[in-house]
Image (cartoon, rainbow, N blue to C red):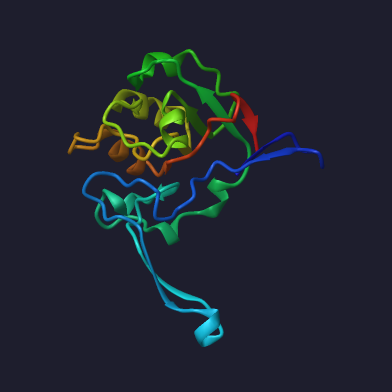
Length: 193
């Protein structure tokens, strides 16, 4: 969640994606499956078995997702996930480039969320190979700028068919937390908490 302003009347934006049977998954990932095991009517309580990938909906990629013998999700500092963040709108319809990032004044923010044309895809629960991704040089620039967390309004930050995953590797090996699948459709560019 992000919220604009710091007073009691601040507006809260839930930027997460619901996870249920309708949630799209990346190619080759298992679909969400929920099986009802008991019911209130029969047993006095509802109980479900849920099977899904850990790469569904809004999620965080831990370094261990791509880099052996590195931090797992439960080993990441929650402090990085809390605090001032900047939503940046990207106009390039293909990828986030270093050239575009060099034009942005991050104002000392170490948490950057990218709003792109992907927001429509995510809001409409669509998977496409034609989405805005983060290129390797842009990922390197984020590391150089001291960014500690970055988020993208799509289910992955690298091109789907790029087996090398250069943006993931560059960010995660430098302890930059990656959040994927954020819904920024209703969030304007600017600073948030």
